[in-house]
Image (cartoon, rainbow, N blue to C red; front, side):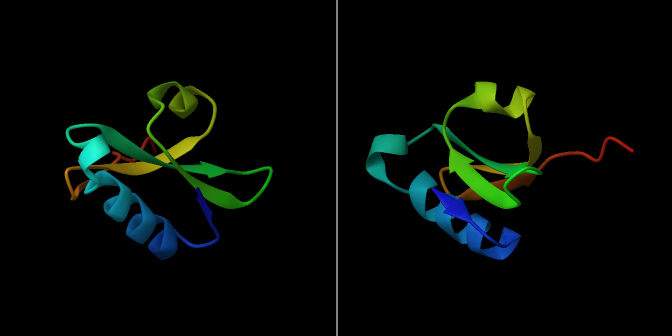
Length: 68
């Protein structure tokens, strides 16, 4: 899934994290500089390639710590 704004991405990620098939899975919100979109995925490896904003687990949001 992809979203243009962080608010839209959070809404999509929260909904996906509340689905029964994703119970206890981490749903990541990743920003891609090339496409300028936020992506929602359950694959943690993608975090190595793009900028992570945060993630949801069972509907609870956790923001990534700032690296600056």
